[in-house]
Length: 171
Image (cartoon, rainbow, N blue to C red; front, side):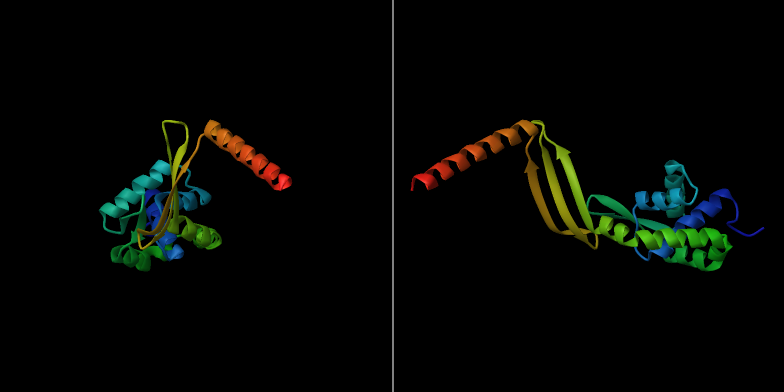
């Protein structure tokens, strides 16, 4: 029986293989998406295996702007070199294909953030950030009004436009 050929060890190797295919750090959610597409349905199992891999020094969680990303360590790379071929070829091809088709989306998700926070008046505070090497290199914060405030502003703008049009016609 090959090493990593059964349940939990196979899932851990799938996580390492996913990181290897991506050639970039991924979030827990991105890893869980890849696992889900390849028959691992339980998000909590995936998170538990990520914790185990981190405890064993195979991966590391790196805090970035408002999230954490997962990177493979040299120990994880060593395990992949030793045991990566023990994953069934069809599974490797499936993971490679899914990651390849979604790599641009994963990169976009990891380099831009949109964070919304509800405000007491019903509006939202929105933060838009571009992230490089884990830090926000460009950030914009916007207060978005609630529906009533927005209607009042629209009515005020309409009144202003009517006045401007009337003044223009009178001139």
